[in-house]
Length: 388
Ligand code: P1T
Image 1 (tube, rainbow, N blue to C red):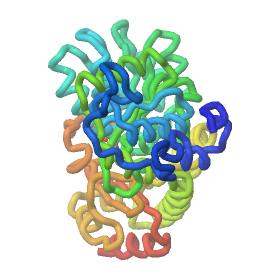
Image 2: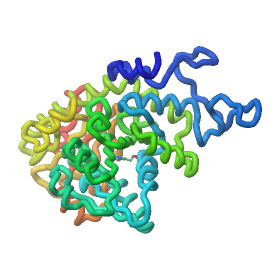
Image 3: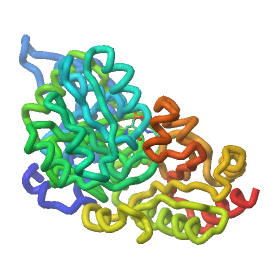
Image 4: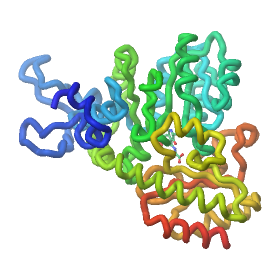
C-alpha cells in the first residue's frame, strides 16, 4: 500500500500498518530490530538509504512513519525521550525569544524551559490556556512558541486547540500541542491547526511502561528539516530495540484507548459520588468545566483522572497513596497497568510550590493513570484505599 492509500485508512488500520511493510530482504512481517550502528556502502555515497545509526535506522524509520501516520502528518521525528523531543523544538529558538506555555503542564517541561533554556536567554511564561483572552494578553512581540498541553497534566483541563492555533498563526507564532494525554486516537492537533505535535511515547503510544521515547510530528518540511538536523547534530536518538517496542505498542493503541476511557469514566463517576472525595477532575464528567469542549474537540475523554479528598491534608492523601493494591504508586502514565501519582512531590516537584498552587494544583491532589484491568477491581481497590 502506498502512502496516499494508507492516509485514507481508518486510524486502527494505520496503527497496525502505517510506516511498515514486510522486510524487503527476508519478508519478515514484523519490522526487525536493526541492531546496527552503521551500514555498508558500495562506493562513497552509494548506500541503501542509511549511512550511520545516529542519523537513521530502519526500525526507527518504520516507527516514524507509523507515528506520522497516526497523527495524520507528513513527518515523524523520533527522540530518545519526550523531553528530548521538547528540547529539540526549543533549540530552534534563539536568545531573546519567548515561550508562552500552559501553567498546568508536565513539571519536566517547566524545568526544561525555565532551568535549561532560561540561562541561554530564552524566556518563558506559564498561563491558564483554558481562557483564550488570558493567552492573548500574555503574548509578547518576542513570543515565538505557543506550548499547549491538552488535557493538561495533572488537572486534565481542556483547552481550545483551534482557537489557540488560530491566534498563534495570526501573530506568526509556532504552535505546539503536547498530545501525550489524549493520543491521536482521541485528538489530532495537526488537523486543528497545530504546527507541531509532541508525544512522550513512553506513555500511551508505547503503552506497556517498558520504554522511554518521544516524537515530534509535523506537516511542515521546514520544521522537519530543522529537527532532523538536530537529530544528526545533537543525537538524542532512540535505540532500535526501543523503537521496536514502541512500534509494537502502537499496534494496539486504538483498542487500549477504548478500555482506558471506559475504565476512567467508571472510576471518575465512582469518585464523584463518594463523600470521601471533594473534587474529581475528568473531562468525561458533565460537571467538569472542560466537558463540552472535550466533547467537540476529542473522540473520547482519556484515561487520566485526578481527585482531591474531602480531607485535603497531606496525611490523608498519603494514606490513600500508600494503601492501594492494584494501583501502583509511581511516576508516569499511559501503560496497561494502573498507576497512582502525587504530583506535588513527584512529577511536578520542580515547579515552585507557589506557582503550582496559583495554577490550581493542590498539594494533596492525587493523579490516577487508569489502566486496562477489570474496572470492578480498580474501583474496589480505590474504595478500600479511601477507607484507610
Ligand atoms: O518522560 P519523557 O518520555 O521524557 O516525557 C516527558 C513528558 C512530556 N509530556 C508530558 C505531557 C508528560 O506527561 C511527560 C512525562 N510525564 C511523566 C513522567 C508523568 O508522570 O507525568
